[in-house]
Image 1 (cartoon, rainbow, N blue to C red):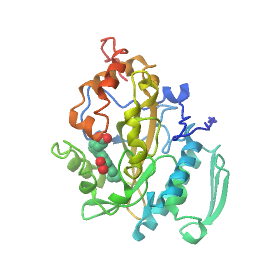
Image 2: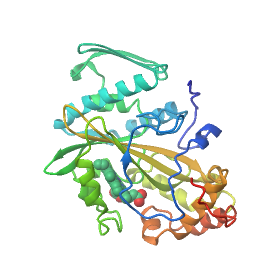
Image 3: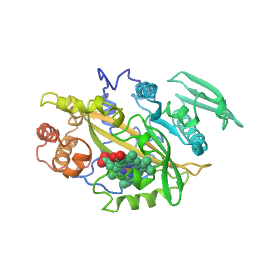
Image 4: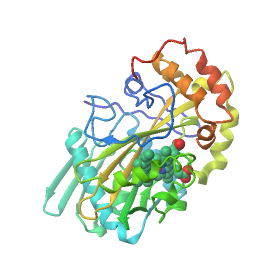
Length: 343
Ligand code: HEM
């Protein structure tokens, strides 16, 4: 299928829009009318045709604009991409995983030609045709992780596995829900999750880590996470909080449907072959509330979830102040009917 790429912005004038196709395939994350943290993980082995789960690395209409936004973030703040010295091999593993997956899954857009270690990578949408030597850093313009993640939607945390734990020793993080790679670099699974409320006491992180330590090569896993963002901002980082935090005060009953966005992360987990590292791609999908409610069962359900969400979660996710406004807006689309017809 040929994708029509949008020319849009995720800052300043915010021209980001979802086409009807993007709304239809949006990964609406709620399976019931309420929400609480859980170890919501499953195998990542494809999904219905056209869905965001179908391919290993989903490419959609926002691809080129998201890559442009990433380049802007990196130009302002190079520390959004970091790799500790022992993670270079994992970077090559990741480059291989993505190049193989994209060239197999989107042969009309990406090509990979391999002759021993002499590789040629063609990225048609971005106009790249590059020959290099696999495992030779000197033949790429950036390190291998940075090279390939400048061409792939979503953030990436690359975790070293040792001492029965995972360590955030590399990453490309420019589209994050208010956390910082520069702060978390070198931390382990429990340390970087420390700010999350309630989940530690529930044992969520102990069970999740056990699962992750056993992810095998060729058997990736996935889960969804979600939050709320005012304006279609990709870069909601602590580093730039002074720029975007203030925008939360700009919501009104008139503009909430257009400005308030549901932000869903498709998080996947892949074991890497040579380094035994685990890569954690975090793909962010944004949708305005006015587009959510165009699907009646989503509108009903989102109203109930947001209305009844424990205050600790609404606070951590950063929308407790605007919750009354959001609930008031969504309540217009909740006719009280059951949502048991699924999502
Ligand atoms: C939040 C990273 C896997 C559950 C977070 C945060 C980070 C993070 C950086 C933000 C913490 C902050 O506020 O500073 C990662 C990485 C993972 C991983 C790198 C892969 C190794 C998981 C898994 C679960 C999980 C498998 C399964 C339950 C959560 C939850 C939150 C969270 C519930 C709070 C999210 C929210 O309410 O919006 N994670 N995580 N994480 N993580 Fe993970």
